[in-house]
Length: 169
Image (cartoon, rainbow, N blue to C red; front, side, top):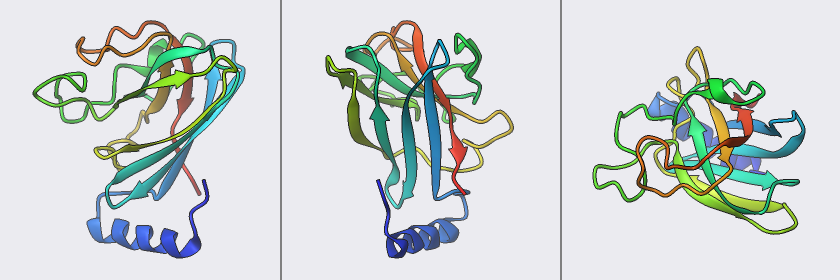
């Protein structure tokens, strides 16, 4: 996804006025548990949240949970990435009456060829100092779907792809 220079300036100006967003854009390069690249996620700050441009390849087909995790560490089994990014301390899942984690996003439906390109607007996510704290944050794809109710993880199964979120220059 390309943002025009004029649109970038508008986003940057709105960001500067809000005082809370540190980056207008960020990226995450996703790898599977074997360390092989499987896609990228570009994150773009907007006045209405963060737009994620997800491009995947070589992924297992099926329905997979897609989350932001609280720690930017993608070791071989992705276990050190922590839980879902949840700075507000609310319950998990879109079906929770009390709200859902900032890191909760819709399931990805990956076709048989293992490739997917999709845009997702996360209206709660800001590219700010909370996301880019000392231990960072990551994007995670799980082996199974998020059931949108089980707290804290959505019963989504093993972590199969991970990428550390880094501010773009």
